[in-house]
Picture 1 (tube, rainbow, N blue to C red):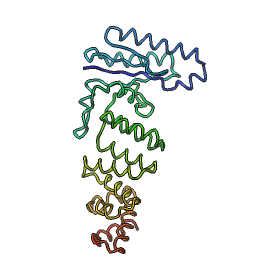
Picture 2 (tube, rainbow, N blue to C red):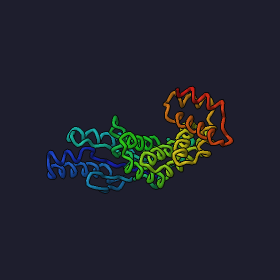
Picture 3 (tube, rainbow, N blue to C red):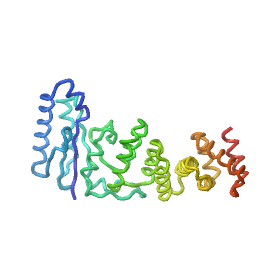
Picture 4 (cartoon, rainbow, N blue to C red):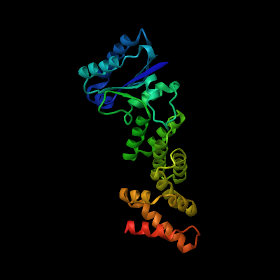
Length: 273
C-alpha cells in the first residue's frame, strides 16, 4: 500500500516572466529541500518536470496534515506561485461510487498529477485527492472552454488508466461530438448507456448523433425508448434534442418507416412548439 503526492506551481509562467529564472530556481530549490526534509525517512522524491515534484511512500507513513502544512507555509513565502498538491492514497481506492470501476493503485502517481492539474484541482483547496469526481471535473472544464483536443487526450488517457464510469463516457462523447467526430461520440454514448441504461441524457445524446450520421432507424429506436416523463424532463432541460426527435418522427412518417408512433409525435411536437 502506497501513497503518491504531486506538488505543482500553478502560476509558474507568470512568476517566471515577472521575476526571472533566478527567482524561479530559488523557489524550486526551497520547495525541493522542504519536501526532502519531510519525506527522506519514509519515501522517494523526484522532479517530474520543471514545475512539479512527486513523492511516493508507504501508506502507513502518510500524513495529510504534513501535506497541507507544506502547501500553506510555501504559500506564505511565495504567494504568487500558488503551490498546490494532488494526492492519491489507499483511502482514495474506497471513495468511488457503486458503478465506478475500482482504481488501480499502480497508477497512483498519474492520478496525483491529474488531481494537481489545471482542470483537475479543486480551486478552493490546496490539496486535492484524485477520484472519479476529479476526472469528471477535468473533462467538464475542458468542454466548457471548448478545449476539445486536450480534453480528448485526457479522456483517452483516463480510459487507459482504468478510470471508467458512465458519466465519463458520456462526457467523452460530448468531447468527440464537439470536435466533429460524431461516430466516435456515438461509441462513447453507447458505452455509457450500457453501464447506465436508465439515464435519459445518454439516450438523447446518442439519438442526436445517430440522426446526424443518417442512421434514422437506430436513432428513432433510441428516442422511442424514452418514457413520457423522460421526454418531459428533456423538454424542460432544453429543446434541441426534442426538436431533433420531432423532426425525425416527421421524417420517418413521411418515408413510411414502420415504427412511427403518432401519439409520441403529438406529445413531442406540442412540447417544442
